[in-house]
Length: 375
Ligand SMILES: Cc1cc2nc3c(=O)[nH]c(=O)nc-3n(C[C@H](O)[C@H](O)[C@H](O)COP(=O)(O)OP(=O)(O)OC[C@H]3O[C@@H](n4cnc5c(N)ncnc54)[C@H](O)[C@@H]3O)c2cc1C
Image (cartoon, rainbow, N blue to C red):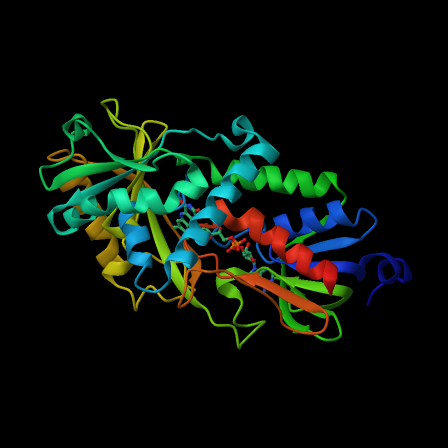
């Protein structure tokens, strides 16, 4: 039972955005900037965003050498270059919009550890640099002169440096998006799970999480920004969930002799230093099928693979004590290109950001807001 005042003030909007990760918040902000008078509501099922945006590793990256080479198996050179360009542009835009200190951004560069089986990639550095010259004007990749300075195991044959990558705090970035949206007058309701959308009518049915009470919201336009969790609202969507695991060590006794965003195994494994600790994650490729899930659980096979990498490759012979672990869910498809499209007369979606949402979330939100403006 709702009051007259509730009915009059809380249920109808110009735009309803579902999901408050990087994409949802970026969509709302960009739409509001273009249409300052628009009333906008964001509905988020978690108490705070609970998808990938607050669970990721904080790599401000656009692709390691072997990851880019691997992309050529599924995409043509133009698609690969466009994707890298889009990610890099996205990183530049968030740095410009929010500032490095707010994002806790550090331009510490990216590094990729190459073992024997990936060494052939070194011969292609020149070609990849040439292909990316149009975007970066300079060489992106080079070989680190003295890779032994990192102290990795002898399994690591060489290290490739990416001069344009960095690291940030994804929670700080999300907080900045949240603050900007609120400042612009976007209303955000959390703990509200959308259970159904009538895509042509702009009707959004939502439940107060766990309470089973249904609220019927109405909007001129609806934006679906639920990434891996979109199948329920958009069953035809071409996307598959992919879980990612992150381990965080206790502070290490010795100072870590490197800084930056480190990648291994075609980008499937990643690690960085944070507050004197080792943050290590990924390795979904060690159990692909089981990781196609929406369950936030740890896969013991992947955890033990990451633990072995820590003590055998990253800090050879050192015992690492772990303090925390968490998982997050990403969305993937046949190509690493996000889906941004109308899915009903009044509804459009922007989902499937893969493992690069830090870089492309803002840009994807901007593109969705432009699409909504035209609908
Ligand atoms: C472990 C891990 C490490 C990663 N590391 C990096 C990295 O270092 N660098 C990088 O660029 N990217 C990384 N990523 C990927 C990046 O985090 C994602 O691409 C990005 O966060 C996607 O943002 P999004 O807003 O589209 O989706 P999400 O952040 O998943 O947001 C979707 C939101 O929708 C909400 N929602 C879902 N269903 C409903 C519903 N029915 N009703 C209401 N709300 C709903 C969810 O609660 C969630 O908050 C990583 C991801 C993971 C999981």
